[in-house]
Amino acid sequence: MKSFKANISVTFLPYSTMKKYTLVFAFLFFLINISAGQSTSVEHKLSPSERLLIPDYLRQIQTNSSNGITQPPFSPVRASAEWEEIDALMITWTSYTSILKEIVRAAQVETKVLIICSDSTSVKNYLSSNSVPLYNIEYLIEPFNSIWCRDYGPWNVYTNDVDSLALIDWIYNRPRAKDDTVPAAIQRHTGLPMYQTTQSPYDLIHTGGNFMTDGLGTGFSSNLILQENPMKSEAGIDSIMNEFMGITRYIKMPTLPYDQIHHIDMHMKLLDEETILMGEYPQGIADGPQIEANLQYILANFNSVFGTPYKVVRVPMPPDNSGAYPNTGGDYRTYANAVFVNKTVILPIYDEQYDTTAIRIWREALPGYTITGINCNSMISALGAIHCITKEVSTADPLLISHQALHDTYNAASPYQVDARILHRSGISQASIYFRTDTLNPYQSTSMNLSSSANDTWTGFIPAQPAGSKVHYYIQAEAVSGKLQVRPLPAPAAYWDFEILLNTTLTENPKSSNSVMSPVFPNPSQGITCIPISTENEAYIEVEIRNSVGQLIEKIYSGKAAGRKNFFVNTGNYSGGVYIIQMSSGDEKTVQKLIVY
Image (cartoon, rainbow, N blue to C red; front, side, top):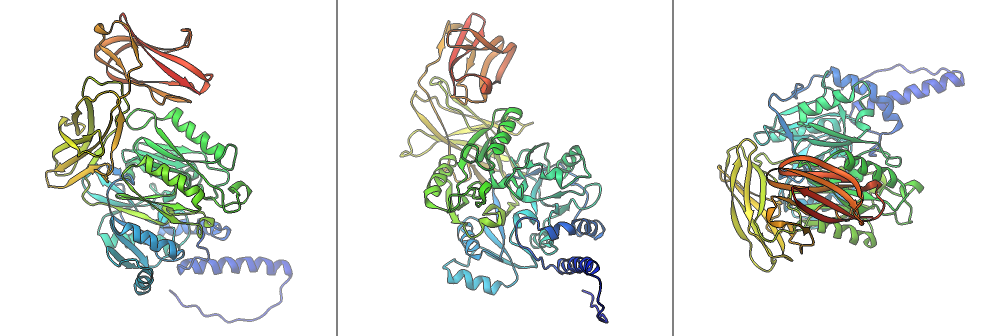
């Protein structure tokens, strides 16, 4: 830091001139503080004075030399999902230490905790005095400005899906010099390569709270990503995200009126490849209408990576202690701002009368996970919670298991096919399905075999079960290297499940059937509905929607089909009531009832 000397004299100036110079000196004072890494604001949102500094901040980034790699990775990359295995969880030890200590307590049983701090002794003393064990913790003495490491910390990608872990560092969307050095500190500590989107033509401003991915090429953000990169086209932004993070489909949604930071992690969370947890306000309240419109936009225009409609789990957005919501000055309380830490999910809580419902919803959505709540009333007014102040470092040795959970079925006669994409850099030596129909009994196992080397797909079969059964199952795989992995990650405590339903499907001429219509979902319906159909051999089929008296409402499909295929109908414009889905194949007709509400 250069030293400055000045000769000072006093001159009286006109008021208008003094006002102008006062603003200039205020700006210079703030600029000097930022250059020294002393942010005058640790709020989550961008302050008005910081907004003035953005142009100069961006020019400095473009001209500064970088220790990172500013070209895209040579090999294709895959950004990891948050529910995948991690080796460490990062936090920055500054404000809200009462919350940080509880994050350490919950996370250290699952993974290493990296604490960015200025004095490790004081951190250790504070943790010890609050009965937090001092194990599985590493302290990085590094500069920082704020607690919001979700936004400025590095992201994780793997080359060739599972080969080598690397870090990605975007241009941080806050002019906070010390925060902006944290990714380099993580890079030095881990020794991982780090790619930076800081130099033209790959310069990209982004923030961690406004991005999530399914781990298989789909990304989600609000339109803040477009607003903060006005000199780039949407296609240009998509290209950078593809080259640096492997995002092949980038879904963007309008920003919300009352969310001052416009980060989607304040109201949305991906629970797995096909399930979206979405915050929900009472009808017409605060950001509720826009959140619902955004959700319906996703459901109407995009399917999950498996080609089927997204499942939706809704969780309340509660009022503050005075009963106010953000549209009337209340805090932006959220239960979506949670973080996966291997077998544990840490989420913010506020008030028992609302917390109990939210925790129940999380437990039902993720059976077998440890759901740990941490009271965040002291920080939620600063527009952030648990997810905002944590950042993952993914495992350096990933064994990927991606599987679409089986749906409820009427099939009680034939085995249930289980497909999973399983891969490890050393190869997969074996994989198995573990299943049971009674939680008091041990799991049984059945082997999976490599069914498609091109897609790394492994296939196995759960034996047929009688109608009325509920099957719990999980997948385990072993790499050639000896690495073992299960999915869901907390298995056998965690599992997927499906039911064998009592058969209410009416079928004419069953002996000639070679086409099967599985149960439609969701049912009851109020929007995009999936109609799964499979045929043993290529066959001509017709799929129609009829009303309760048999009148044709809509023809969904007419043509040849082979194998398994999903058809879709949008019931959003249908009147409430009972409809009939009819599949015709030759002289056979199969029907199911569909309830629209």
